[in-house]
Image (cartoon, rainbow, N blue to C red; front, side, top):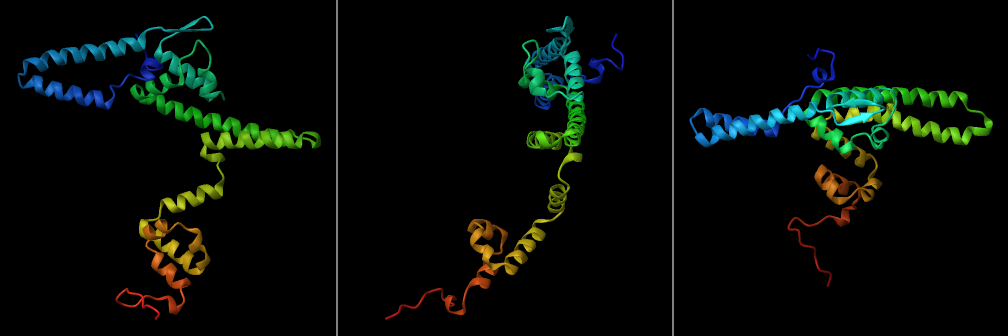
Length: 236
């Protein structure tokens, strides 16, 4: 019998929402006495039971150990938390493909949550490895170690926000908290202060932001203004 610590309890099978919604429709129709829906409901329940049984089947043998889907998910997540990447793990012939793992996440959302946390741990490991590379470098290996440091730092930032550039994160967070009107107002003030920027910004972007009129007023000369009727005079 499975206990709370076993993978089948840690990452229980969940029916995808689209399939679950279809099941609700069939069950509702069956409750109102629709004979055809009763047979459909039986078939639906049978398919769900088969899917759960399929997850318990042992389909992989790695290093002499047999794995079903639950154990394989736990195995993969543990390796990611130890610093390995999912593409590298899934590249082995005796492992499931990355596509298959991502499809499993749809039916095992708790496994997706655990995987995301494992990626954060992996990012921390890579960040510490980058720091250690910088500490251990010497004059002869500065160029090579610099490339290694930058690659490790970028990989760490992708997996763990703690290692992202603070200035970039601050700017992203700042704009995330602004309303559409506040963003338009900020763009308007930037263009009013620097009229030369008008030529560098696409006209459709200016129009969408609602600042094209103000921008034109900053750069136009009085003689370029249109008459009220919108018709330019013809020079005879």
